[in-house]
Length: 287
Length: 336
Image (cartoon, rainbow over all chains, first blue to last red; front, side, top):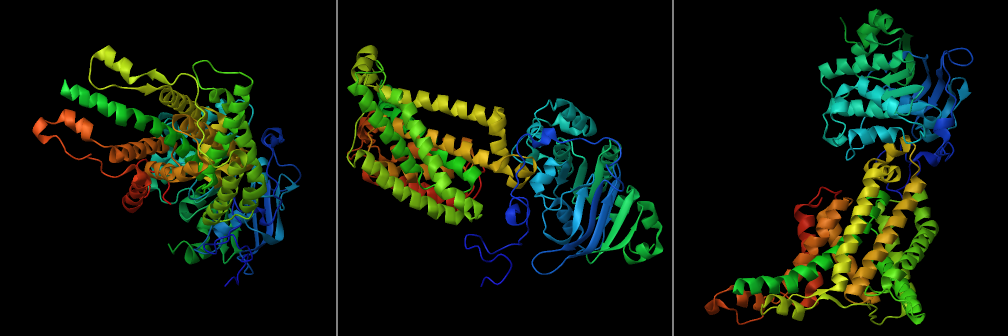
């Protein structure tokens, strides 16, 4: 009956996937929950990444759920203040790669470094304290709390005055200022995404990771959201996102990664990938 | 004049007692709903937590009385209440460390935690009986009435009296203070907000750096405080008996579920719904109807729907109806 993976725990339900998710993170990686002041004391590097090469480096990642490797020697880099986009067909391991970079998936091989610091062994929470912010695809707001409270929770670890950051978020997403007393669960899909991105920005991250930020929003809202993401990148925050809307995402990408079956298939700048006949034929559907 | 007497009789026998009882249930249900919303299981030991807190409070009350310390017209138990709260918080935090924490670290599913809480319930059951015995205890002292039926009659000249016992007044006032303080805490303070965030979306709360251990500790402290206050108020208003407190679990859970589990506002509303249903259905309406109806229609029987012996059946029936037709409760809580 309990043939698979972690079936040895008699207290747990044997249903659903066995993600090493955020709440269930103590499987690998330390239980290391960041102490409350960890967020404020972290050094903020301005300018180029320490050492040479890209700011966020995920190299040769191999791993998956149980014994099957979903990621096969997958490498993703992101430069400071640039937008990197992971695209690929369904089941290519895009979200899995994102989860691996954020520490939600145990890697058999490979390493993840941020600003030259190796964070491969850290739990997701500890990575937040290192300056990574993650916006999950779903359940990415506190539905019963107001927009303002959602943003406040993003700044939970900060002991300094975060009102300035909140003003910046309101400048970026003016609609949130209007609705700041409203419960986040009552907002439209696009507005909820804005709350989610805003919450992540409140941590003053160095890397912002977005898992399909435009899933389920209208094309107009999608363009709007992409514009905002470009603005965020201009402030020096590194952006890494997974996107289904490949064409639009690659248009704004400084760097694009096409994954096929968990491995890097094509890597280039966004426009170059869009112009690549091979990518167009196999992945973007002709034209 | 008759209608006025009917109204006074209704207030005296239904509205005042049900309001006090509702306030007690609401405080109990708030504790249950907080534990459910944040720790994600139904805490069956809550009734016995109330009993433990009340038992300690009674012991301290006796101690104070033996020193000759009183609280003027107010019951001495109110002076002893902080000690009861402290003891209960210590016990509950100890149990969390020794029992629940293990299951949390195992990421046990809620149904296992429910059974674990039943085990804790039986242990606390025994603990309370060791501490104070199984007998009924009356520990209310101080002034008995804010207004007696006789006072009211001579004041208004009506045939019916309206009595307001001091314990009823204290219950309602204390409940209002506690609820206002709780809502202020949850809505305005950083810790309170982090608790709501944790209840809303655990994963995202962890991503925001909210420390789950701290949330759990604060939740237990609040739950134990609410349980002790609810237990002491109930005991002052009626009497303390360990078995009665164990039985209170049903109306308390019914209140929390009717209001919407995990929703504090719902717990309060649910408490009053259950209390008023229980009291109106077990009250003998003969007197009120006798005043309100023309003489020819005056009832011969007691006009009591069910005997007070069956009062728990009321909560149970409401619980079943709500679970069948509106499992999330009046105020959209989580469904179970």
